[in-house]
Structure formats: C-alpha cells, structure tokens
Amino acid sequence: MGRQLGGTIFNMATNDNVTTTTGGGMSVREAGKRGGDRVKAKYGSEFYEAIGRKGGEATKSKYGPSFYEEIGAKGGQKLKRTTKTAG
Image 1 (cartoon, rainbow, N blue to C red):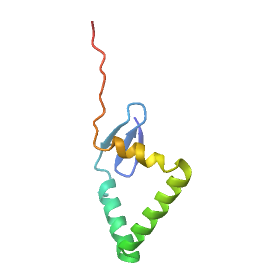
Image 2: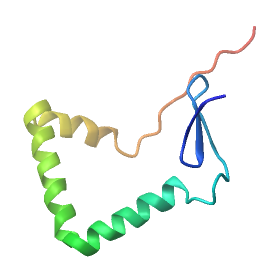
Image 3: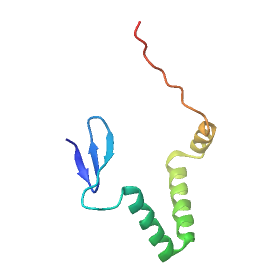
Image 4: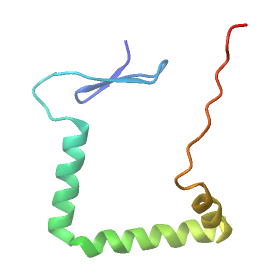
C-alpha cells in the first residue's frame, strides 16, 4: 500500500495516484482551486502577475535567455515515444 495524503493514495513504486473517499474531504484539485481563489480575492490578480514576473526573471538569470528559445522551440511539439516490440 502507498502513502496517503488527504483523499489520495500515492503508490511510490508505480506512481499511481488513486482518489479515495476518506472522511468526506475534498479532492486535491478542489483544494487547489479554493486556495487559488482565496489568494486572488485577498491579493488581486496583479499578485499572480508579479510572482510570475519574478519567477521568469529568476529563471532567466539562472539559465540565461537562450533557455527560453529552447523551450519555445519545443512548444507544441509532441514527444515521440519509442516502444520495444517483442521480436
């Protein structure tokens, strides 16, 4: 059995996340939405703009401007999955 956090069981070996109905709590998604709504109500939408800008500047100083070119070029591209076939 995996670790339980709230109503979700995390099975570390297989990385399966299974939602359960323990204690009538809310889902992780619902909790995140409610938390985000409360932060927005308290600080305003400008708060998210400011922290996004700070994060972007920190990423730029850590990885350099060329990092954005690389991830921009990858945007929208599907990753090719290689599968092993029994032969």
